[in-house]
Length: 509
Ligand code: GLA
Image (cartoon, rainbow, N blue to C red):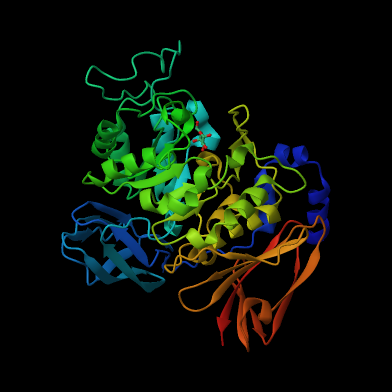
C-alpha cells in the first residue's frame, strides 16, 4: 500500500506536492528516532588557532537533562556541565585529545575528541544555516536570533549544526529610498553601518554565542554586494576588524561587483587577489573566522581556494539552477564532484546550500513554499552532499521545519560520513545517464558509498567489489535506515527509487 501511495505522489505534478507541504512525507521517514540515552554526535577533530576563543557546544541527542563531563580537558578550556558548551582558549599549538562524556537516567556515552591548535580551521566541513534562500532582503536581527533558537529547539544543534549565518542585505543599500536600508552606508571614519533591521550586531552575535552556536556574516570584495548593498572594497582591513569585534566566526565573501575594480583579466592574480587580501586581514584578528569564497567556480578556484580560504563555491547558485528532467541539485552536485581531489581538511569544495523544507524561489526572492523535491530526491541530495564532504548549510525556513525535513538533515550516520576526519571527498564512478556511484574512503578503512538512480522509474542496481577495488566478505550497512543488511562476498544489489539513492557503508568483516 505504501508503495502505491508513493508512486501516486511521484506521478503528481509538482504543484500538488507544494500545495500540501512536505510534512505529509512523514511516512517516508527512514532515520530512526535517536535513543533516550545520550549519543554524542560531535566531529572527532576540531581546528582552533592558539589564543583565540573556542565556543563549542557538544552535539548530543538523548533525553535532557544530560550531564556532560570531559576527561583530559586541556588547560584554558571550561565546560558547562549542563549545556555541554565548551569555552576558553589554548595558548600553545598542539594536538589535545580528550574524552567527551554524556550521562542521563537512560545511560551514558563517551567519544574521543581532538582539538588541533594550529593555523587550520574547518578541519571538517562547516555545518549550519544561512538566511539567503528563505529571507533574502527581508532578513532582520530578530529572524537571526530566532534561527539560533530554532537550531537548538529542533535538535539540529544536537547533530552538529552550529553556524547561524546571515547572507546579503544586512548593510545599507545603494540608491535606496526605503528608510530602513537607504542612507549613509559608512560613517565619517569609514565604519560600515548596518541597516535599521540590525540595530545591534554585537548583541546579535553574543545572543547566538550564548547558545553555544557560531555567527556568520556576508559581504563582497567589490563596491557593492550582489543585491546592491554596501561592499568592502577599499575597506577590507577595517571590515575584518569590525566583523571580529562584532563577534563573527564565519565570512562568506561574494565576488559580485568586484569585476568592476578587478583590473585586467590577464593578470595572474586576477581571481585570487581579493580573497588573499581578506584572508590575510582575518588572520590578524584574535578570533577564528572561517572564510567561504563565493565566486561561482571562476578561475578554477578549486586549484587555489585552499591557499586563501576554507571552502569555495564551485558553481553558480543552486537556487537558480534549472529543474530539467532531474532537479538542479543533481547537475550542481555532479559538477562539484569533478573537483574531488582538491578537498582536504580545512579546504572544501562547496556546491551551495541544502534547499529542502520551505524555500523561497531565488528568481523573485520570493516567500518560502514547500520544496517540490520528492522524498527520495531529498535523500539523494543529502547523501551527495555528505559523500562530497560539502559544507552542510541548510537554507530553508528554520521556523517551518517538519519531521520529514529534519529526518533528512539529522541522520547521525549520514552526517558522520560528511564529518569524517580523513576529509576525503567521494569519487564519482560509473556515471551513465541512468545511474552513478560515489565512493568515499573513511578514516576507519570502511567505504561510504552512494548508489544513485537517475531514472524516472525504480531500478535494481548492482555494484561489484572489483569496481570498488575491494575483495572478500564485507558487512554492508544501510545508513539512512541505520540497519546492517548482511555480509556480501563480491557484490551488492539493491532496488532504488526514482531519482533516489542507496547510501551504504561497507566494513571489513
Ligand atoms: C550570490 C550568491 C548567493 C547569495 C546572493 C546574495 O548570488 O551566490 O549565494 O549570497 O549572491 O545576493
